[in-house]
Image (tube, rainbow, N blue to C red; front, side, top):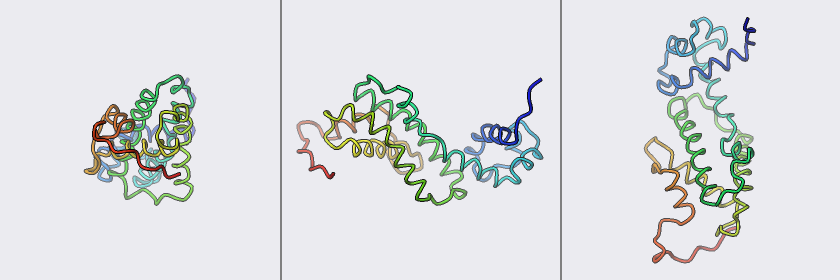
Length: 197
């Protein structure tokens, strides 16, 4: 006999199940569609969340708290022994997946998102710490301080993976190339600008 789920486990299971339909339909999604995606009765949704908006707000809040995929990969040893090119590619691939999901959430459910708090912004900054530590192994090849290189790589990824009409879709390989070599041909590349510490 399978043990009963706690109410929190049930809520998490429902949120997992409704993520895709919520991202596809946004605020237009119906309670009936959410219940069908979760494989439960509408009454179960209401019991677990109160109403559709509360469910969607819980989904937005949970997705906003997701651990940084790049940081997880680095902490698990995925970056050990990689070349700078391999490291940048690994970071770009994982970050693109995560940021695309977050941009979809913003597009479809953005009105339910809260203004980021100072703690949220500080956490976004802290998420770069593993990137910085991994890139630091290659600091001799970087033309800027490691923290700045990590921030630049993240900004390239963010700009490159936004599907909402701004930004330029780029592959991880293109991101790595721009990150490591810029866009100017070597023959026409100016001297590097002075580094701002």
